Length: 258
Image (cartoon, rainbow, N blue to C red; front, side):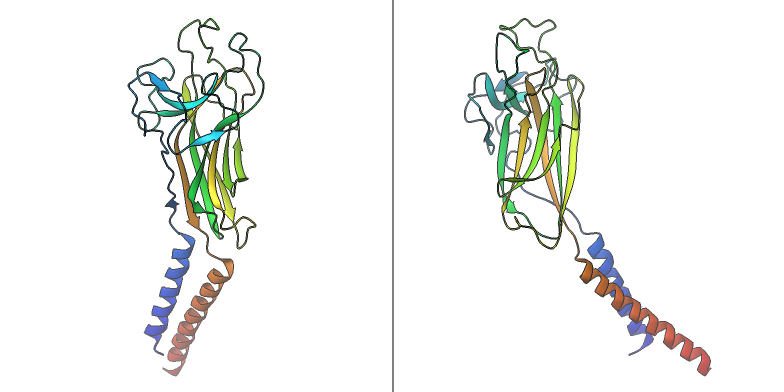
């Protein structure tokens, strides 16, 4: 084999190793990921049953005092800006006692969706969700006629497989009143997992654990990136190293013979 051919083989193998290590993320399909399916006028909301399209109830929801739904905050005092993405945001509203909003039952509830995609081995998952802390609708709310939104009841974002939690962001952020922050976490799955092949899911939870009654969610994204198996990458790298060593050996032999 010629030196040129060996160089070409080595370069091709190294390119393959580079391609394996820089695999591109695939955005997995989520129904109504931005809560835009229901069109709402500015500064309006809808918490009627069954809730946002594509999402199901998690926990105890009555679509009255404890509701899931959709809000368009544009033109309101609820958020200093508009929705992070599109017009609407998701709503998880938990008012346990309309006459005493300082009493909290501590019963969490929220939104959940099962995806068409399944948990894959040798894959890194990145889940990103916008988390909102809604502000008061009026300057000095008086319950029970006015809802006191001030405060933050806490949130959790769960990544599921087969209905079981495999990774979470458990209330790591505290958005300012009337603001959103971005929750993001990663999970790497190796060569095997007990839940491999099970349907992935996403759960958006209001922890109902402190002052405030509502958490808003928006722009839900789940990326999947293939992780090369170490043995495969090592094998390719070894082959490239061998080819380059043969090139250097031939060069050395050519110099000595001349």
